[in-house]
Structure formats: structure tokens, C-alpha cells
Length: 152
Image (cartoon, rainbow, N blue to C red):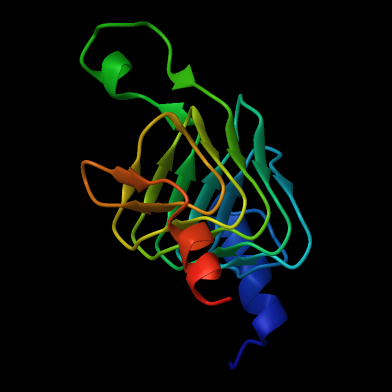
């Protein structure tokens, strides 16, 4: 038997808790995130909005293998608290998030910003036109605004 793509999607959805979505069958979307227009989310990425408010603006590009996750269970796991912590995430318009990055609860990324591949973004306010890079992360505020000015 040679299953069709639709049959594969249906079977995959039944075997996992991955809801059907407009991005890719191997993108896991949990909860009810607000996702804008013209957004790309690469395969094997996670968008977990369960128990918190998660917004992804218009014209964002989220690469493959990215975790955008409002939940943090590490303190529960080691017995410091009884419940999983959940914090809101806002990603404004025209944001690029590189492969293998993690966006944690409590993050607000300003428009026209870039998160470099492999970056772990801890709770903070990232100003518009910024570059966020590394672990521990470094925010280069206005990095892309400076490039715009130099190219005039």
C-alpha cells in the first residue's frame, strides 16, 4: 500500500498530539497561539502556548528545530515548585529566528529583529531592529537599524 500525503497526515495526527496546521505536519503547535499572516515555521519546530498567551506577528520566519515555549518545568522537576511555570511570549512583525534556537516564556522580541541560530532567549525585552546571539544571549540593540543607516 502506498499512502497519500493526506493519509499520512491523518495517521500522524492520530498517533501523536500534533494538531494539523498550515505550516508542516512535523510542526508541533500546542495551545492556541495567535500567529500572523505570511509566517513560516520550519519542520520539527515547537510552538507551545498551553496556559499562556503567545503571539507571533506577521511576516516572521521561524527556522526548523526551533522551540518557542511558554512553559518551563525545570523548577517543578527538581521539587522547588508544584506547578509548571508559564509566561507569555510576544514576537512582533518581521522577526527571523534561526535554527536550533529556544524562545522561553517571558520574552518580547521587537519588530525587525533577528535571533541567531542556536541562541537561547531568556525572559527579556528585545528592542526593535536588534540582533540576539549566543548562550548566554547577548542583545545587540539597534544592530539592523545601524545597517539601514549605513546603506542610505
